[in-house]
Length: 376
Image (tube, rainbow, N blue to C red; front, top):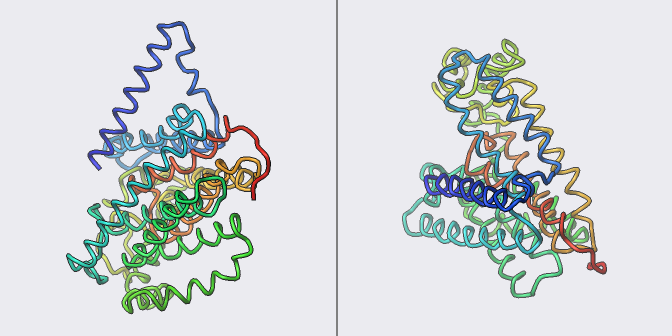
């Protein structure tokens, strides 16, 4: 995380220095950053509402410290300004492929060597928690699978993407993380419908194959997803009830950024399992409780804008390089939303960063991508 923060800071400083030199040379200093994408509006609205919520927080001083986290949303501007063409976009995905390879190898070591092979000791790939690890693998597997399923790239590249995507998806299963199971399944459905509709009938067979291949503990964990008597499921229901009370009391700006952890004991339901929680395990509930219903609507607007604008690009047969990026973004977008119904992944900065980059890439690539003859 520290390395990622340093890298983001260096990127911002480099961008400022680059545009300062351009200004000194007589160019438009903000030229590349005037490029627009469908994400700019809803992201700007979410950031604005989050800042306003600080002013109405139950502890404005405490909430003000959370403002620094909004710097992450500058990634949408950076991608739009720094990614000039399709080649740049795919170079970035190539870098993500290396990241995926590391996470897969580290996860295999965790599981088979270090013994993180059960629900009590889960593999995390060297990250802070297994949910972050599962969320990242979920997104990366779908992005790489989209490239593997889309024509236009060298065969060996597509095979490499496909093999690594399959390995990453398998590792998601080994994390015992049920929200990621649901998100990955939803993402795969979207990917099949956009990339290979004829394979839709094969999805049930794939599920059966996974059930056979995965360890018994993973199968049992997946089967417990909809068990309302499960302790984690009961606790989530209690958290959502507490969140609903917070929203009812402060519907417009919430209790304030960073305040849920401190206030949860006050709103905790008698049937809750955990005495203290850091978040409410649901993107919509957590955002509405923390920064208000308008902020939750802005979050939904980000998801809808990315999907609505990305869908035509995913069907554009004249630009396969853009189409593969759009397909991956659509699948990842749906996966993160579905997983986010049971986990606050929008508040997981590692997952949020990869989400913003992946969603912004197709629009940056499409801006300069030439039109060619249709490709299947």
